[in-house]
Length: 353
Ligand SMILES: Cc1ncc(COP(=O)(O)O)c(C=O)c1O
Image (cartoon, rainbow, N blue to C red; front, top):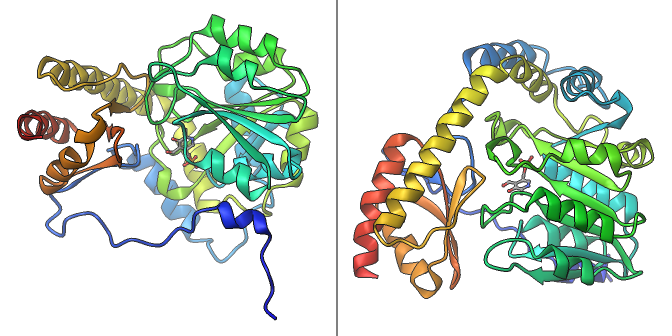
C-alpha cells in the first residue's frame, strides 16, 4: 500500500521538463513567456552581486524592507502589502486562505493557465466564462457568481488576448458581486496598459479586492521570482499566514528594491516596448495578419486552425512564440530586431498557411 495523493490532484496536469528551446547559435528569440527582452539595469545587477555574497544567510521570513518600499511607493499601509515568489506564489496563498473543497472559483477563459490549476489543487470547482470578442464578459461573469463562489480571478489586462476591461464596467462588476467574494485583480501587465484600470485605487474602496502585480514583466526580473499583492488587513494577514517562510529570496528582494529606485529608466523601456507593440500590430494588420489590440507586452493572433503551421514557421525562423492549438498564437513583443523578423516571417508564413 503506497501513500495516496488527494484525488483532486488527478485533474491537475503534471509538468514535465522540456529541452531548452533557444538555438545554440544565440539567434533565437524567446517570445513565448511575455518576458522583458532587456536584462536588469547595471545598478540592479550590482545589488544582485552584493546580495549574492550573503547567499549563505537565510532571507527574512517575510521581506520587511521590500514591503516598506512597496507601501511607500503605492501609498498604502505596510500591513496591506503581501509578497510572494512571483504572483503565482501569491495565488497559492490565496487559495489556501479562502478555498474549501467544493467552493466555486469564477474566471474567464481563455485566461491565465494558473487559475484552473490553483482551483483544482484546492479541490474547488472551476467555473469558466467564455471571453466575448477576446475580452472579459463581466456581465456574464457576474451572472455565474453563486452562493458557493468564494473567489473570482480577473486577469486585467487578459493573458493571452491582451485586452482590457473598461474602468466603468469593472466598477459595475464589483458593485454586482457580493462583498463576501474575493476578487483577485491580476495586474501582471499593468505597467504596459493605458486602460485607466488601477487595482490599487480600486482596493482602497473595496475590501474584497486583492490586486496582484509582479516584478517579472515591466521590471524585467522574471528569473528572480518576486511579486506582490495589496489587500485590506483581514485578507493580507491571511495571505501572510499562508506564505512559505523565506519564500522570497534575498537576491530577489535587493533587486526589487533597487528596481523601484530606477523606475524612470525601467518605465522608459516599457514605453519603448509599448511603441514597438503598437507598431508591430499595425504592421501585421496591414499585411492581413489577424491581431487584437493589446494593453500588454504581447499580441494575440487569432489564427484558428492556421495557428499550428504558422507557429512552426516562426519557430523555424528562431521566433519562439506560444501556440494555442486551434485557437491562435501569443507573441511577446521583443527587441526591435526580433519584431522586424516577426513581420517578415509572418507575412511569408500566412501566404503559405
Ligand atoms: C496574468 C499573469 N499573471 C501572473 C503571471 C506570472 O507572474 P509571476 O512571474 O509574478 O509569477 C503571468 C506570467 O506570464 C501572467 O501572465
